[in-house]
Image (cartoon, rainbow, N blue to C red; front, side, top):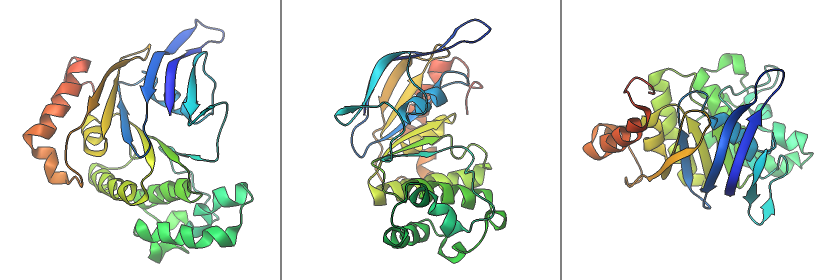
Length: 252
């Protein structure tokens, strides 16, 4: 994905608000890129643009050799809330993109079950969302976004509503899933430590109007463990990113 000079304005009855300004970024095949920034800096707006859900006011987004002009079947999206249908089982929730796109259910059934097994939910395949924890529901949401084998996955603070311990566990699970599936991921988060733990590169955004302040390469070995979060190299990355926001209390 190539993002060139992207800008986004929001207006209505009140004054025009510049949400994003002059965003330039390349995302390579198979790369894990995290985006961090303070509330209101345009992180989620950028993700919605890259998902083809809203247009830009200026600039262009290229996906492969084509301009992005709307939603695409080969881009999966995971939001903060998994938005599962309560009357459908885990398996049937995972298969929603297959049903919506009118693809061959039988063809994708084994892939759905393989992914459910990969995230440790094989015993819950016939359970309903109300019978799952928050972390388990989010895993179903991630698997649903992957079931039709998209080239890229966009994730908008998918673990933001989870408690700290579950969130750490989900970070480990997501890293494992990404390494197994070789997907390209753009991950929006408020948490600096989460971004450093997961990403190959961290994009640091300024307060509104959102611009890119720095793109930081994270030179930490894979597979990363939670113990690495207490090491000096990890802490140095966190301090460098936090320095963009003035005080330690601005972000997680």
